[in-house]
Image 1 (cartoon, rainbow, N blue to C red):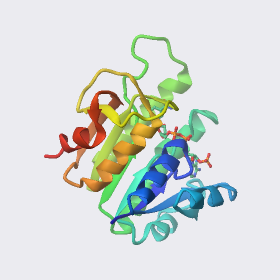
Image 2 (cartoon, helix red, strand yellow; image 1 turned 90 degrees about the vertical axis):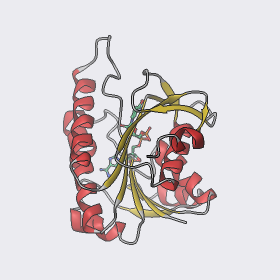
Image 3 (cartoon, helix red, strand yellow; image 1 turned 60 degrees about the horizontal axis):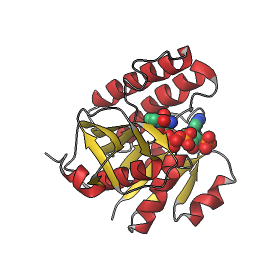
Image 4 (cartoon, helix red, strand yellow; image 1 turned 45 degrees about the horizontal axis):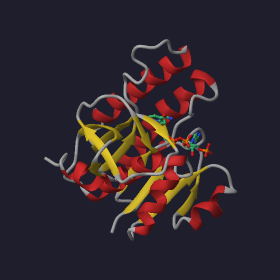
Length: 218
Ligand SMILES: NC(=O)c1ccc[n+]([C@@H]2O[C@H](COP(=O)([O-])OP(=O)(O)OC[C@H]3O[C@@H](n4cnc5c(N)ncnc54)[C@H](OP(=O)(O)O)[C@@H]3O)[C@@H](O)[C@H]2O)c1
C-alpha cells in the first residue's frame, strides 16, 4: 500500500482521488488551505495537511511530504486571480512541489496538466492562452526534473458521474472527461509504477480505466 501526497488535495479532482486511494487501502495525505476542508477530507478517509503553496518554501513543503511514496500535483488557480495567480500556483507552485519532492527523496510525481490544444480552432481569452502556456512550461519543468514522472493531460473536466471507461494515449483527439474518471486514472497510475516518464492524454472513452493504464506500461 502506498502513501500518496496530493497537492490540491481539497480540489475537485484531488478529493475524488483521496477518496479512491483510501477505499483501496492506500494512505492519502491531502494538502489544503481552508481549515473547514480538514473535516471534509477526514470524512473521505484522507489525512488533511494544512499548507499554502504561496507561503511554503521547498524545505517546508519537503517536510510535509516526508515519508510519502508518491506526489500527485492537482493544484491550480482555476483561471481565478489573473495571470499572477496562474503563475504562482500552476507555474511556481509546480516548481516548488518538484523541488520539495526531490528534497524529500521521493521519486514518483504525477502531474495533472492540460491538453495544449484545448482551445484549438476557437477564439480564446488572454487568460486562457496564458494558462495553457504556463501548463506547458510546467510540463517541461517536470520532464527536466530527473524524477519518475507521469504527466496526465485530461480534456475538459466535467462533473458527470464517472463511467470507469476512458480513452488514454500518447496522442488522442480532444474531448471531455468526468473528474471521477480522472481520479480513477490517477489511482491506477499510482498503482502501476511501470507507467513512467510518459505524457498521457485522457478523455472519456470505451476502455476500462485499469486496462487503459496497463496498456501504457513499457
Ligand atoms: N477545468 C478543466 O476543464 C481542466 C482541464 C484540464 C486540466 N485541468 C487542471 O486540472 C487540475 C484539477 O482541476 P480541479 O477541477 O480539481 O480544480 P480545483 O477544484 O480548482 O482544484 C485546485 C486546487 O488547487 C488548490 N490551490 C489553489 N491555490 C493554492 C495554493 N496557494 N496552495 C495550495 N493549494 C492551492 C485549490 O485549493 P482551495 O480549495 O483552497 O481553493 C484547489 O483545491 C487543475 O490544475 C486544472 O488546471 C482543468
